[in-house]
Length: 454
View 1: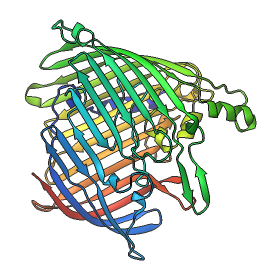
View 2 (view 1 turned 60 degrees about the vertical axis):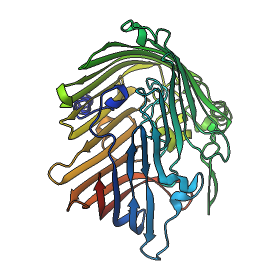
View 3 (view 1 turned 180 degrees about the horizontal axis):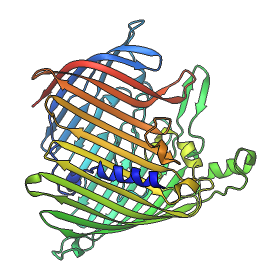
View 4 (view 1 turned 90 degrees about the horizontal axis):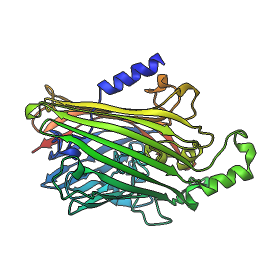
């Protein structure tokens, strides 16, 4: 328990969340840049030479980010095309195309990478990513539209590859009955209803045959929920928000049938059925004069019913949907906490982190989730950007060990002159094996290239 407490304190100290969604302007937004980095990349047991061209532009409310890979096999000179196989193909070069800011502008739309998206207050769908693998990077769409300050609609669709069945779709209509009044607190009261559905039937074709990687979702996987929230206090320095959420994960018929037909493959003492959970939390945003210092903190108390996991639709869901569903088997009624705390300091350093931690983790079959983000402007001539996520943790002593439950990226650069920089890009991601399945791999890419900010 002491080690758990130390990890919690560390995450809560080294952390930050996106202030822009609540009216707190971040110094790390709306940057325009072009980078094209030439280097050597190891993917599995193969070596590639080439570059990734990654421009980012901001035009008023519009944002655009591209990721164009030009990698050539060092042994035979062939261009690597795996990133464009299946699905939306070359559309994957669009990392994101966005309009507006979520929860700040009346219209927000984003196309591309859905990393970091959440629905409502996040109990059902949070910490989500549709891009856990270069080979299966997806192009999704997220939108949040408010009508006359009273009615609103949030929606997320994970994959615009329209071949096959419906992919993960989540929607949340919300209602602010007093939105057009000027009554403090009361005008911010918001009621929401959430629904998520996934009928993914993706199959990986390989030399070893066809591998069904979505046995259970293809017949339908769904959840629904209700929430209410309000801004209790808002002024130039502080914003305090309260919310309450209820979520139900519907029984997956295909998984229930498999348990019934093949009881020997499962723990005979484990039960499975629909599961539900409840959570209530407070979130505070604080900024010092002239944006010198931002602080954000959230604390949420959670109650888990049998066969329920909070933030069920997260980045781990897209790594392996069948495994994620099987985590629900035998999950017993318990409680937990979700916490995040962060800072943006002097418009130079931004750090964020979070922890979802069930009570009595050692005796629970639910896993914890940890996450840390880091971003800096140039300090001297150095700059860093990193992200780390790990799910399904049963021992916080393993929180920072990279394995099949992890996603990580760290980029450290050194500016050579106004237009050139060198650095190292480290990725812990997922890549396709010869048999068509996916495994966690690491990629280390030293590079030198063009980097222009304007």
